[in-house]
Length: 289
Image 1 (tube, helix red, strand yellow):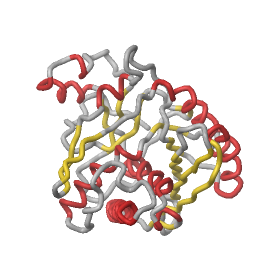
Image 2 (cartoon, rainbow, N blue to C red):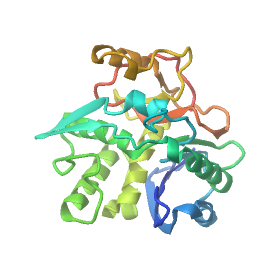
Image 3 (cartoon, rainbow, N blue to C red):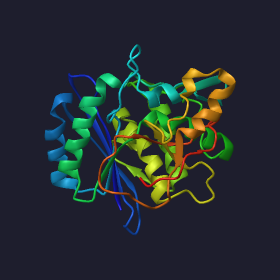
């Protein structure tokens, strides 16, 4: 099983593409990372270049919206409205709230096009391409580090603490990568190990897939699917009073079947995530990736 995570530039200017990948069939699985410069509008060319050295992959994760209609007045997709700002973790004096989605509707068409390009250039006939955002890993990593006492996380004061080029950002990036390595039981090499934010984000977004195909021994936090449109059309959490929101979110989540992949193609019906601190247990029917 070869899994690839891609961190994409969201603006139309030149940016950085972060890649993190792992081959779980190897004798000593490790996460490798790479950063490649290119325009946000040139994703297909960047993917083709990367594929010459590293493709193909069985599962590809992208950090842009893949499909989904936005709310008429906010631009947020239903899944973003259902789970936005629905979890928090306390890290020392910091109370970090998550997830902090961008309004995804305006980016869904380009995200779908990039997902298709990734599948075409970096996949094969059986490849699955899904949406997975780095910020959906950070709260659980912080909680894991605090509970285990194995990794100091004092520099991770927010969801974007590892961004930028300063000393504090570099320290936050190294702490996140260290916590990832302990959680997944793998070594990380390349620019993510040196704190480059785009590579670090690609590593973080990789974790929910690893929990499906190489779950942490004794782990209690599993991967979940956040439905864009849940089966049975349950009430939307944003439409009820605060005391009822948590229970409704459970109906918008499915636990993932461990170690199994569904039909090939582009998944446009939700987001792959870790179950964040404070979220209820997923109540919808379990599903394949």
